[in-house]
Amino acid sequence: MSPAMRSPTDEAVAALEHGWPAWQIWTVPTWDGHKRATIWCARRWDWQPGQPVLNAYSADELVEYLEEASS
Image (cartoon, rainbow, N blue to C red; front, side):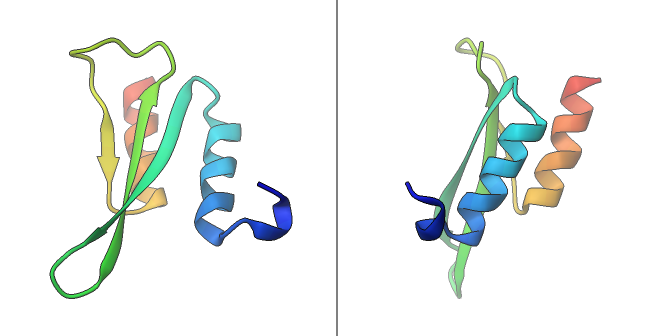
């Protein structure tokens, strides 16, 4: 995707991936019953079944989880 076509969410995912290169990061659009929401997800690139997948309600919350998981 060209930089001109990236959304703010795409930019945030790219920044997180740059800061956390061992982690695959993506978002899942969802509906919380009243409005559109985004779930932020991450798992290590060497992830194996049974290992955790991180889920957060914001990019900032995901960073907190990444810091915890990486310590």
